[in-house]
Length: 114
Length: 112
Image (cartoon, rainbow over all chains, first blue to last red; front, side, top):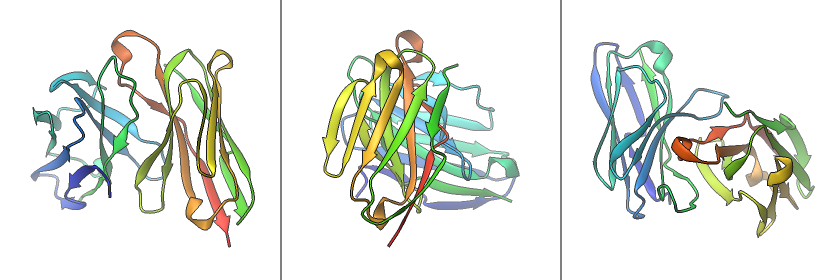
């Protein structure tokens, strides 16, 4: 069983909808990440939170809005998405800066934008 | 940004065979990880190995940071080893901490 839990597993949304992806970890990690993965491509970093503060935003469009309410939770709010945003969205966690630590991924949310 | 090249892009094996996957990177790194993505999309961390050698069962990995490459060895392959193997690296220093750049992956197919 993965130690990083993502919900929902699948999501279909229209271009005018607002939805949220959720991620939870209980490993005591203080760094959390959102990655996007298109079919047959490697994951691409979107956002990094360190100690609940946004530390890296890889020039992601504003229709993606991350939120880190506490050290265990990470959300990704979606609004006015485009069909090309359909992808697997992966959450990950690790120890933050200064502590060498592997990245642990959740099972992902497979998003389809219609 | 840093370039990460993995080879071979595709690999087909018979069950029981051994294989070596390679990851070359273009800059100094202090973070290198190997992942396996199974056919259902689950990404599993195999090794955190910015330098040196590690072994875990039938898998082992070696990173020679000074020469900017890492190798993943799979021995006595099984059908469950099928999937995509990714190498991911992070640059040494500063504001780039936490940013991992993934290679394009090696697609491994193990036939029974």
